[in-house]
Length: 267
Image (cartoon, rainbow, N blue to C red; front, side, top):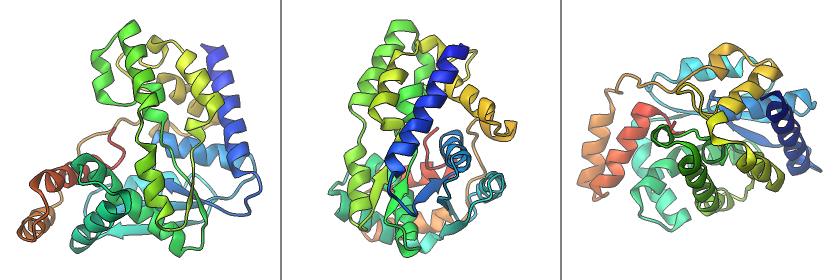
């Protein structure tokens, strides 16, 4: 196991170095979760100083953990709170920028767009994101139902079909370049070669990535944290009714409710 941890740690550091080469400044979409926190730690260890972009919905309950996690790093940060009455506007912006009416794409795209927008307003021209970590290291809950070769095949398929085009379209619409260390060619090659039973261990998803985070010295509150349901934001009902009256499809709204409950990383 130590060999995989060391190799993955080294590959991620090299990927971060490559994708930030020549950049004087860049943003990092920061959720306080494992993926973005590990990227922030690697950046800090390399002497890089990304602007942490924190995004959360008003009343979601996530802001406390996100701020606490961000406080682990001596890095500047900017926060974007998405208010209820902004959701409809962001839905339309995402539909136009990504060219899609797919409810899942739109629900994921709303907080992403808000983060990209905040980074652009802050003067950034490039933004680092954690896309690819869930598909590569078995971060989604659905992977718990799969074992062995079946899981490895599912991960390979999901990595190959990840909808990075949607996210690049959103970033590009705001004049931003998206930096994706987890999708670096060498990281993907190494990640797909790590046995599936070392990505999920005792029901713990992304096990090997958590071990890298531990090795880097991230606190247990970050590397051991599992995504849990949070109290439903009381203002969402009013937003849903208002958006529905204006013709946004119900599936889109239901996915936005799901995001407001469970967090935008889908973990």
